[in-house]
Image (cartoon, rainbow, N blue to C red):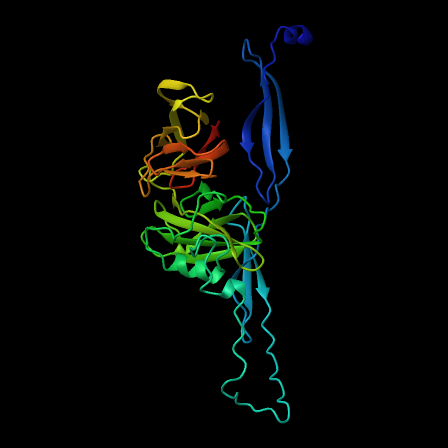
Length: 358
């Protein structure tokens, strides 16, 4: 009789009820339930468990340098839950013995002796990038570090670019901001800088991974406050590979201080190059050499939220030799080829438009 009754039921999809999600250290569970799509009678219910996820540790960050008298400390955070922090002690430094003077050596150097050795490439404060700026490709680490920490409170140092790092915030809480950027082939480390908006940058960490969770800038982050960040990619000689534009990000806690959810871009020319009567959403356009057009962009805030404006929407060409763009979104085709225009918000959220020039 039961089989006959169930034969008339139309089994629906499996749904989860009474779910407890698994965490780094604790198992999760849920009840898998199936209802009839016609009469909504419960047909099946099973309790299932999920294994603990385990920690996803980031790179070690030195929080206290060791000395000859005191031990140091390094920490790392779990990407799944930034409140999970692992700490390790760094042994004290071993003092180096004084070298024995060689008989006959004069301890006081004679004027006119050998000059001081030249500084290493990454330690030369006068070494600028290929574009002549302290943040451009090829500049020394000390030059870009000085430029960032001394920069005006609302300006990026000369030589910064949105691409190729494309720095953005991927997660915010009331007390933490998670950053992510694109890995660079020639980079071995990334220096992360941050500050509250209106203050000067300070270096927060130097690490090998392409993501970082910020919980403290001098003091713990506060809710509903805007902060800004810059990332520098460095090669094995401590020379700049690329320096990002600043990303302005707010912690959660106030719907009037939210971060952009997306960037919407419109154009009056189609993917195939046909003119349109009005602006329409686009991800690709086609132009002829020397032809110009205009992109129109706006940010999309989260539902029932507003974004405080620290910087207007920005436009950047990935290859100015093919296509150029002004800070107002006016696009000019230069030479045959294909290149992207990155249209990005203050938090790093971006919409890329592919431009084909024929």
